[in-house]
Length: 154
Image (cartoon, rainbow, N blue to C red; front, top):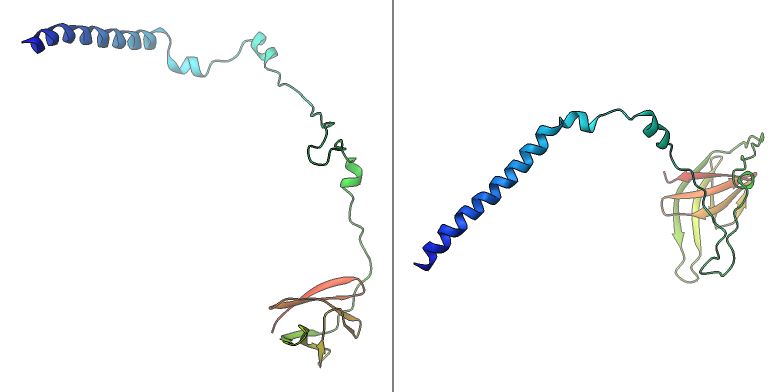
């Protein structure tokens, strides 16, 4: 019988609470349409106050790792335009066939065809104005007259 008494007391309390919640929601929605609240145009006073903030960064703090003040380089020194060279490199016909490693001393030699003549080259070796700069498993990088070119394996 104790349970029936609590149900008779709590049921009207719950109904009253829910009725108040529903009343508040309906009363709020009836005051002003949602579309006019969300998309209203600002007044001139609000438009003047809507100017975005401007700020600058202060980068004169000390570097926490180097213990030196941070210096900003001038934009002119950072954004240098690359110098255009008018030198046209006359590349000979180069073909890369493969590489050979020596197990004894770790030397690497490659088979390169320059102007239809086959050569075995090592890194930093120069033949017919073509210098071997770097050797990769699938390509080599050669330079001639200061310009570099990548040649892929045939």
